[in-house]
Amino acid sequence: MTDSIARLDALATRCLTATDIASGSEYHAGGSEYRAGGSEYSAGGSEYMVWRLWGAGPPVVLLHGGSGSWTHWARNIMPLARHFTVWVPDLPGFGDSGLPPGVETAEALADIVSSGLDDVVSPPAPVSLVGFSFGGIIAGLVAARQRDRVRTLVLIGAGGLALGAAPTRQLARVTPNLTLAEARAAHRENLEILMIADPAQIDEAAVDVQMENVRRTRFKIGAIPFSDALVRALPRISARLVAVWGARDVFPASPPELRHATLAAHHPEVDFRLIDGAGHWANWEAADAVNAMLLDVLGAGTPARA
Image (tube, rainbow, N blue to C red; front, side, top):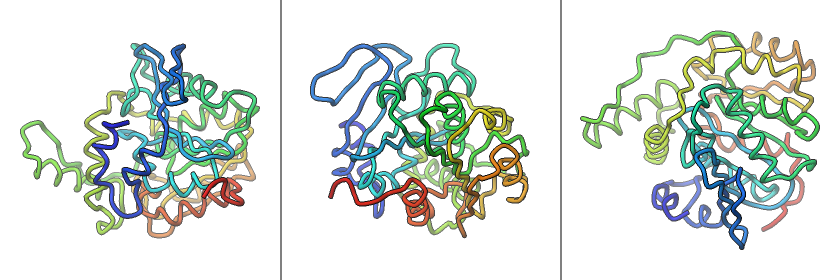
């Protein structure tokens, strides 16, 4: 994990420190090579996923958003790891994970993630899934495949409801000819346009995470966030469903009432929540509120470790 620590040691207050990062373990799931000591599980091929692990207790899996990586959860991992075993992968084609040839759809990604989940949390052990944005679509598709053991599915700012996209300001272009300062300014502007409602929350750590994640993204999500991919999976999901949006999320074209109704058509008992003041990346911008919500809905009790 040396490279990960070097890239992310600038994460500041309320984020993972280098010590926190080093306290985790790293697995390459989906293959046959296992290195003793529990530190690395390698596929030996382009299809591998990298999963990071913290904590102890019931397993919880966090799936990041588009143009992202596990670092989308930097402000959430350690509070959860006091109560749960927290698995945080890079989705195929993002971050440190490989992208197998021909994998171009959400369904194909979900197949790989579901297989990887079986590797890191052996069936039939129950598991909870939390997905942010594009990761919410993938989490829903995995929950549909793993309906007998996914006990809670939490969606944060999820797409895939076929409710359209709200118009936003044009994003700043990040091109190779920009200086580092210009590139950072462009990423900061894009975070303000799409991801974070309060510009004061766009600190240097947020820009670091955004720049690194965008640079390493290879999977083309295209129009998947605006498709009906999640809606089509909902009838096959038996897990308790919790759906959360930042109240100032600019992505949805639909009002909260319509999002709630769309989910409730398949899951009448859906627990629908809004995070006051937060934008799309609520798990970063309103980390304290999101962490409290997750600990509540996932059933955290006495911490599993100090």
